[in-house]
Length: 376
Image (cartoon, rainbow, N blue to C red):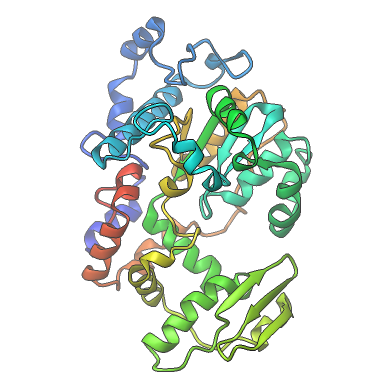
């Protein structure tokens, strides 16, 4: 396992690789073959749009040809996985009432009417930076402000005020948006994403995310430490404070800075976090729920399927196609910050084979959609 994982971390891997990898695919369509396909008008893969124009008449030639082919490959790959797992229910196909049934679950699709764009956000897949970008597209932030606005202002104030989720539109408007707006969603290696959740929400900044700390903390106390649960059993997170209920039944209200006084001082290990996820499949949190359960790619024909590995490239090209202000740049991670992928070996090398096998089974559809068949 360690050898494979070392290769996985060291390699400049692609998000989509199975028997036919994205890299192999890009090689196969390079040169004259790509040119020939473009000339026949079959290479855009953009919901029926021609290679010449998309989204308000913006020239598709404004983005690299290889990137267009990469998106085409990803879209087809996701469709293939949907068929494999019998998840392919088109909006107008076998289940015509699908949109009505899941209307309340379409809150992750954020609509920017000004740009005729709907983006499905997934926590821990550049969620905050994409919301910053959507706010700029909506005119709520300037290109300069996009880097300065704090995450809590984005999530608790600005996004709710300026960006409307798809589930708040009428059925007719939802259908119109999905048929006429450009749509996008992103995938990420699920095991890398789990590590990102652990480091960001538990290990490094636990009291900024008390709802996750409580879920896992009470499990660790009873399952591994033989102690009674000491974390809140219910938490409502607000911008500057939390409301909750302790195991004793006592309710409380506390500022975020006072949370350490309420919570037990215990360390939660990565393997314990993974065991919680495996043993509580029905208590799945949005931060580790597979993207296909939030974005419905088997039902919604997304124009752009992005990869966390090629986030900067994908975001740049999507913004170009949307005719965004040239000064608007997708926010990048701070220089010197360790990427989660570079830490995969450090955290996973002591995880048991049985735990890894259970994770791979639990995330098998996500893994295939992300095309990481040899993920560890």
